[in-house]
Image (cartoon, rainbow, N blue to C red; front, side, top):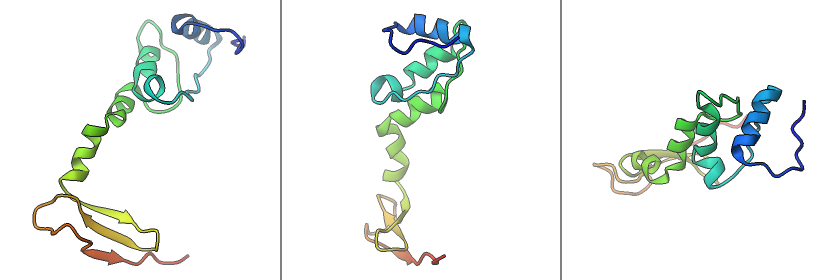
Length: 110
């Protein structure tokens, strides 16, 4: 059974039909509904249990929280790739660094 893509469905009906068909939901939604873990959490509920692609609801929600995920980068040194080549160790707030590039490591050419 294929779910007809040309019908407008509420989430409950969509999940019920997907579960009945044994479908795996390919999540291509972006922004709030697709990126914040809401859809994933709904599909993962015990009474719904529909498989989906991508990360689970907890990981998705965590990654969507830009303030929380930025905290480690604002309190430590960060190794970043440079557009001109090499890796740069940058201070983004760690103690003992002055805030400028401290180390440049060349990347071996392949």
